[in-house]
Amino acid sequence: MTAAAKTPRQSEAVIADLMMPQHANGLRVPSVFGGVIMSMVDRCAALSAMRHAGGQATTLSIDKILFKEPIWVGELVEIRSRVVFVGRTSMAVLANVYAENITQGTRRHANECWLTFVHLGADGKPAAVPQLTLETAEDRLLHEVAERRRAQSLAERR
Ligand SMILES: CC(C)(COP(=O)(O)OP(=O)(O)OC[C@H]1O[C@@H](n2cnc3c(N)ncnc32)[C@H](O)[C@@H]1OP(=O)(O)O)[C@@H](O)C(=O)NCCC(=O)NCCS
View 1 (cartoon, helix red, strand yellow):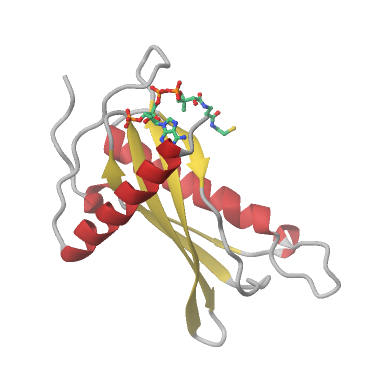
View 2 (tube, protein in one colour):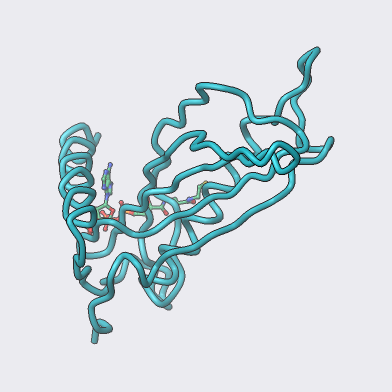
């Protein structure tokens, strides 16, 4: 039996890490390596998917992450994510990336990323997830966006 419906708020997850020299890329003026941010996004979004599903979930897709400006070593990176749409076994997760310069007291929204996870049952096969209860106007808007993105992705499926 599938568990009771959950709200996007119930799957909210946050991970944060101070960017250290080992997180830097090899540029002459080093900024944070993009793969570090991608890994943080995937891990945070996985927590949201697992919270919603109440069990294990695997990454099906990670949409484009656009790095419009660098994140610097010494900054605090915070990822916030939540499930914004569910199908039968899949979940769309929206992750937002924030970078905070603690000494200057500034914080910016660095980028956002859409991911899809599939809940796996004990047998390792896709399994049904709880329904999603939308609470706010933002929930409904993000749900619509995610639904369109999923339809497009399925249409392009090979
Ligand atoms: C995720 C995985 C189990 C799905 O297997 P599958 O054979 O495609 O399973 P299904 O056909 O039952 O699809 C599962 C769900 O994914 C959705 N899906 C599959 N392909 C999709 C696509 N291209 N776009 C959007 N949704 C898609 C299906 O619609 C279904 O969701 P729904 O039940 O909500 O409708 C399988 O692709 C897998 O194991 N991938 C590797 C995952 C992994 O290792 N991730 C870590 C990165 S290396």
